[in-house]
Image (cartoon, rainbow, N blue to C red):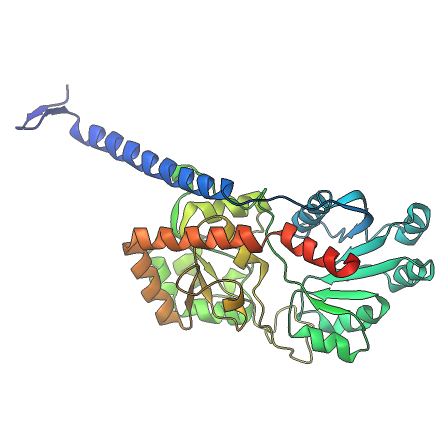
Length: 372
């Protein structure tokens, strides 16, 4: 029988077990209260959509994972904005489908595997075709040959607008990617899924060099890194137990963000040596999609600085930035120790994201450009 300990406050049998139960209850209550705050904020933001009397033929990438969640997000959002939406993918005979269906517009996502002969055939039928490039500027050596075939070019990277205009494209628009709130939203993950720090992404060479400088620090924290190529790290064994070397599905990624107190975002370098088809070294200044997805999960985002970031979030108000490994470490330490500040910034980031950076907002902008 476990010993009984007497003190002036209470009698405890198996005191550590009771203490653990109380701590777990308090933690569960705290997380539930936080989740309730997030839900209340979400409900306060109007999400009405203007349904247009148009027929859109959407050409998904057809690449499979990791593009399939983006295909789904755009398709489902278009269904809320157009009276009729038909779906195809880049591997199908889209020109034949377009001639048969006669849509008001054909929207091609990514377009890297969609034949320009198909684009030309559709346009000869008097049907407008637009493309939304999702990986600029990292594939501009390829997209430079594709863009002139389209009536309208949309690009997530602002610096690519003059690039496509110089190629003779008459209608070029900057339209960043965004977030699909049906997937990326606050949740209340189990205690076992909670970490102090998380990073999701591939170890491009320049990214790996940066992480080489913070490996010793991250090894001392409750860290979770998910992605491929992390064996490139100079001291990989120090972090190996904290790294999951695979791609995650969108819902897994959202759960990862929700389980972390701080999520690091590090943009891909425009001149990295890994899988880069940007021989002109066009600079990247616009935020990546992860910027919006992290904030949509009401998690404090610690991101490197990109020139256009203040156009989307107020630094140190709705998002937190770093410019060096040491500054990253200092800010992680600060916000791990200042919980209320951390949560307030995360809530502001969530609010800004749902007001301005959803795929609903992005596609409303696109359709307004195309149809007035």
